Image 1 (cartoon, rainbow, N blue to C red):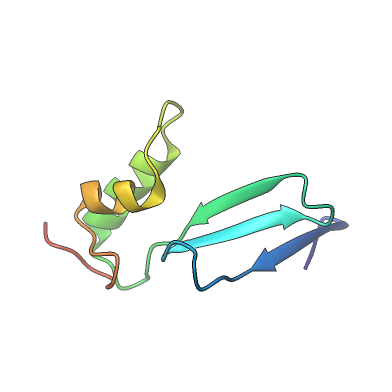
Image 2 (image 1 turned 135 degrees about the vertical axis):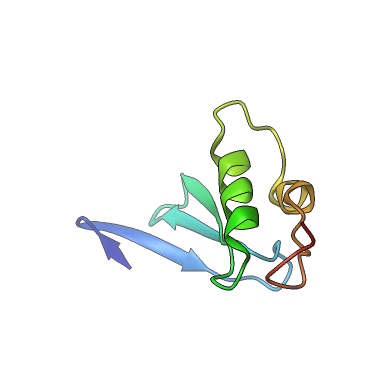
Length: 80
C-alpha cells in the first residue's frame, strides 16, 4: 500500500494478536501496531479502549488493554 508516496506493508499472521494490524515500512525497519476496535463495540467501551491505548505512558500489551477495557478478545462487545 502506498501512503503519501511511501510503501507500507500490511501483514496478517495467524499467530498474531487478534484486533491488531501491524504496519511496517518497505525495508521492515520500522513497525507500528494498530489496535482495531470492532465497529459494533459499545461506544463507551470503545472510547475507554482507545483512551488506554493512546496514553503516552501506556505499557500494556494489546491483549491487556482489551481485557482491562472489558472487551472479550474473541468478540466485538464486552461486559460493561
